[in-house]
Length: 271
Image 1 (cartoon, rainbow, N blue to C red):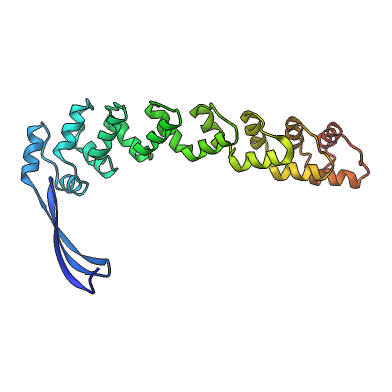
Image 2 (cartoon, one colour):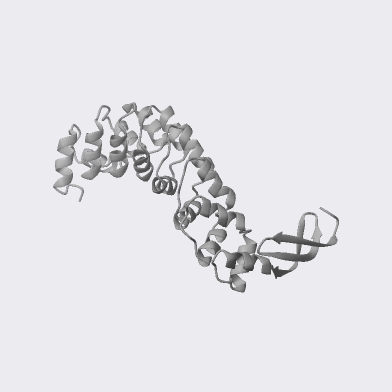
């Protein structure tokens, strides 16, 4: 945060040291660095049966702070033996010593270096696992954790559904709910329109068939006050929209039931 000064510093890692020099002012800086690979790190790798890394591999291992402690932790936890390329990939994707240790403390024995890398890639954090655990989802299979994150099932989403009265759902049910666009806002709007809290499957069906709160509201404004969800779905499926109803009324069909409107739509009366 100086007013402007030349700086020199080193970032020392097991695989090598970054010797940096540049200029800093008000928290911003620029400069250059030289990487000095550590031959002792290469020797330690070779003791563990690894070939000497390429310059690029050693640079990446240093940049991502991969250590012998990390290798030893993987071995102690029974992970499959990682190749140098896999170790580089793990570092580049953010798989750290702290991450694998936290997974172990949470009761997860992943053992696959590719799978633990996939977990990090998809955002399965220890905090996410802890939050799911606190909500009753304990020792969730790793692939299910990944799928849960990928589909946007967050602890906040689960809490919102719980507050809306939807409890005891599995992660698979929650995933399907998110995938089909059913959220707390949709549930509240449907409730406000007089449909209470229908089963989630009915809400999913409404979304799948385009029965939106706007559609329901417009249908109600046209005098259809007590239609069931199934009737609304049928209307949307057959093209009985608010615009269609208005057109039919303009043609003299003023006291027409839902079934009659559907028949009219099926006969092509929209032309």
